[in-house]
Image (tube, rainbow, N blue to C red; front, side, top):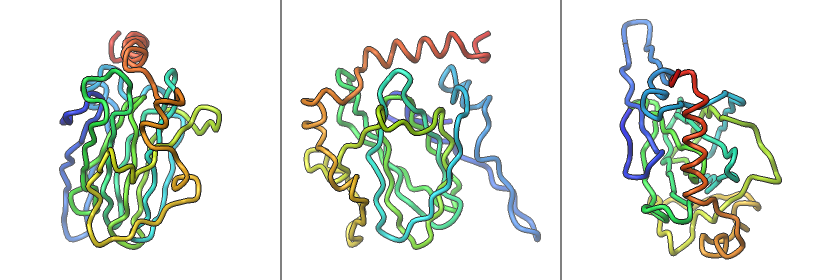
Length: 204
């Protein structure tokens, strides 16, 4: 596991075994994530799969902390640009984003801890992304920041017209979300991470 410049954002580089039959790889190993983060994904609550046409832009999604929602994603067909955004007010890297190409060749996986925003754009048709989540959806606690917020200036691929859901396209900017009190606090997130580390079997 390799930590990105945003605390709580990690990339897993996977060894792919190939022979005449095809390929095999482990895209998720709970002990590896637990060793890196101190608590891993916590209790796995949901696994989802999304199939997106080229240009589909999903996010930036995040949830209230606690409990938040940690996510671990990989692309099993085609390619996407996965993005993690630090939306934790008070964080030393607040507003920073990191982008990682996830595709069916490199087999990278991207982890975003509770309190971080996450999004992706499909670079190919039928881009298939699988997600592991620490909890399921909760409309009362789930939020979105506009992925095309000019102040964030995320470098989405040039020449690809973004296709967004009505909900995502109507999302507030980061500044609007902060003024509305929708963003998680870095201090609260840090306290929550410490709680999860204390509860994790990996720390026993």
